[in-house]
Length: 521
Image 1: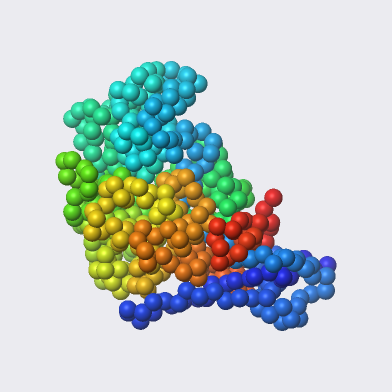
Image 2: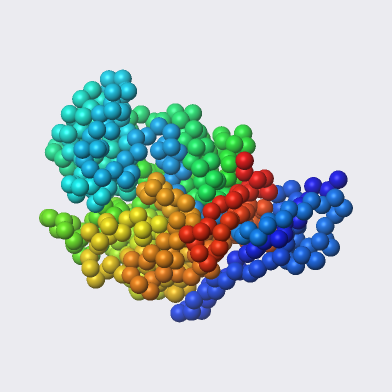
């Protein structure tokens, strides 16, 4: 008996392939309609007109009527911290959306009451721009809320952290401690950028079982949102081992690409290049660097001062150019794709110079820039010339707008996460969420933000562009464009089935997610 199935009776759309256009011309981001697909054992056997597909089917082929719904290649989140999403859904104190310091301290006190003395209290998600007081949690108040426990509260961006006195003491941090690429405001109990690593090491490495719990929880949640593949950035050796173990046991619900971190926070240690690994569910052929901080917390490296900050601040640049180049060159020569977090114009200047030097040394894979938040015309042009892949986050436009209004210099506001400019420049764009930096990692929320909520009028993108960036763009960014991202013969059967009208994004919902042809429960 045949185990093949024909999918028909709905709107089936596949992104058109694209090559880099001539300089100054925009690449096509179209969608091609199909009538039917023939699938078998996790692969597409035929795609096109219903009559042609039926003629290629075997006796006993099943027929699945999509009943007018929309079938797309599965969504890809090209930058989401999977294990941290899982943490917030299982063990971490979730402070996202909290509106006052009083509420933060209340939740900390309640959580501390459930812990043993000396046990770490870890939370995430505060955002001073949303708080009534417009200021971060204080060391003294956290001491009062949790007098028996060390406290670490990570800001929503993960670039700033509030701690209490016990956490500072256990981490060996004094008023005189300094750390490369970071800052310590001891009296306030605030740690910036790489200083976080001092506390993370003091907490003790999570166990393999904890990492596996968090990864599974995060991936199962992503799958429920129609996401069939994702990139987890900043993966260290223990987390890599957890992913390998889950893959070996066949326990990865979706396909995952890893960006392996070279320089962890908290010092000058550099991890060796990882062992490359590629299976149908797991890929590790890329490495990660942080060039600067976050824009929503005013730590991205910019060339003019942030608004509203006194004394004036220009953000934090984590590397000297030569040091970043030497580390990147090792990875480049070994054939690793490089994804570098770069948001501010100073960081983009540095990273693009480094990438240009890499390609002058030798050919290599197309490298990525994560976020690409304050790109000006010169950055867009250089990125296009070098073939760089941009990985921005549309959902930032809605969730973090209040932060950008608070901190970004007025003359740069309209170039802040200007998605349209990236497409107009001819870049390959892969959309993502950067969860749990934001509460909403749902691609449909990101889709609506890209189409309806630009920071400035005229910066919105088209439906075709957005869907392309959430499907094929992500596959290209991860090196899997020959396997997924399109409804094409030979491709994996990774699909999302949507209810609602594509032209009314607010009406859309996920009806079914399929990875390897298997419907989600």
